Length: 221
Image (tube, rainbow, N blue to C red):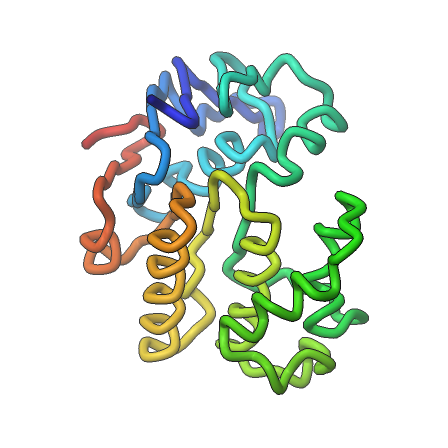
């Protein structure tokens, strides 16, 4: 059964009044617990599709359905409520809040859910990811790999049903990037979280159960 589905999804934007079709009639079903890589050249629409699937944006036409909920019919605030606890997101540039420590960054989504044990939950997952000695460090005091692990901890701490990752190793060296991807796959297996990520690395994509490719806004397998 599909945990998330894109049905005839199109995305059009305008540049100097000229329409640009980024996505054209995309159909995609992703099953619960599946690992899926979205491949494609720069500008092919990968990040746009990921944002639509995660409910961060809405399609010009078509429908995104997350756990039976039709996202395009919701307001921005309603989509945010749906995402909370269901969806995690890991960005290429980490997107940690610089004024918060590692543990405070990880606690943030838990506090939005009013979890009474937010600090303990954040502490536990940071320990699990090898950051026991970095809880009180600010992002500027962490290496790139450590920042990405904090970002992964923040994404996983709410035990989301789906984790989206946009070029999660793009800002890391090869060795660190391999460790980060191994960590993502380990967490996917442990928590049975559906993992959908965008990459230009075909070798990395081979580790996924399924791969799709975007070419000129259209999806191919």
